[in-house]
Image 1 (tube, rainbow over the protein chains, first blue to last red):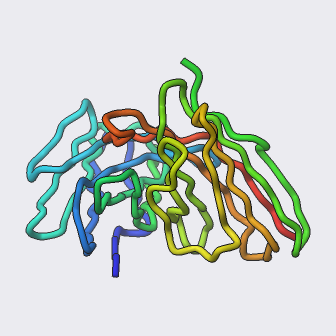
Image 2 (cartoon, one colour):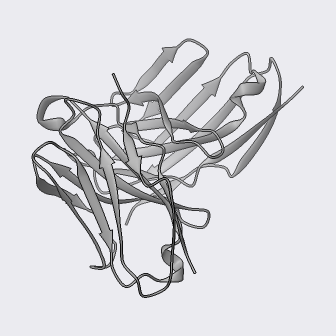
Length: 110
Length: 115
């Protein structure tokens, strides 16, 4: 079956760096996604990886290793507004169906 | 461009009743996906519609159904509601070739409470 694992919660200090790991075991692979979700709001797209390597987008970077079934999201220069849940999701086939991990709640402290 | 809209935003129903939720995708987007979000199970895929056809289906009982209209608006229906159906129901729309894109845009969700 499908299994996507990520830590439940992480705490970091404003201005620091946090790395959120995600491991997956799925029957197919057609891309890995990271979404940010603030409490009470809809998820918003952060990044997409389909090939191995690092994708950088401002303060956020995402890495993928398909052979290891592993990805991470790196948040740099943390700001208070980065306190949110971060969701890792895998697309297994050609459609838009995403299988999500349980989410990692990141708390940024002053 | 307006975002994804969902109606109603909040709903309270009684066990055994049925409910219909509506989703209007971003203009031009032809794919609509539905997800259920609960504290215990997280975000789970319900189904995806593209050009009025169900393209993908998640592992939910037959009480959960959906449809898409020619203007790409979508509805989902839950019959014989159970307490465990209390959740945030999110829809997401997508553009791209055959409606498949690296980015899906989520609506604000409908918060369903079953009592």
